[in-house]
Length: 132
Image 1 (cartoon, rainbow, N blue to C red):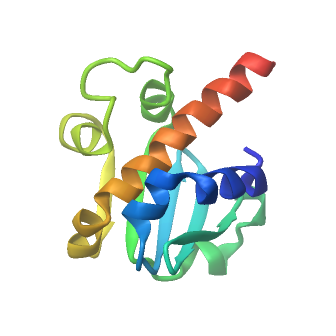
Image 2: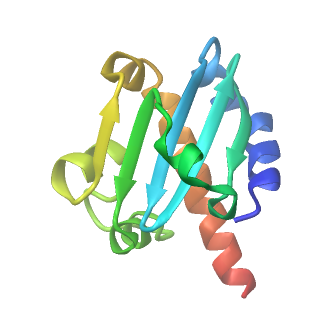
C-alpha cells in the first residue's frame, strides 16, 4: 500500500475530517503478519508507518487502539462487496476472527473515524487489485 497517497487522500475526505476532529491517537493495525502504525494528530492522519518500516521498537510500543486479524479475514473484509458481518469493523470483531483492544472509550468515541479509515482501505485495496 502506498501509505503516503493513502494518507493524503484520507485527510482530504470531508467525512473523515468531521468524524476525526479533535482526535489524537496512535492506532496499531495488524493485517496478518504486517503491522501498520497510524498516528492521528488533531483529527488528521499524520503518518502511517508501512510494514517495511517496522522494527521491534515500533511494534512493541504502547498504542491507544489496536486492531488485528489474520490475512484471510482481512481479505474477506476488504472485498468490494463483503459478505455479511464483514461490511463493518464492529460486526467483524463480534462475529469473526478480528480482535481489538486499548482505550475503549476512545474506540467508540471515534468509531465513525475508524470506520471511515477502513472504508478508504477497502476502496484503496480494490483499486490496487484492479490495477494489477
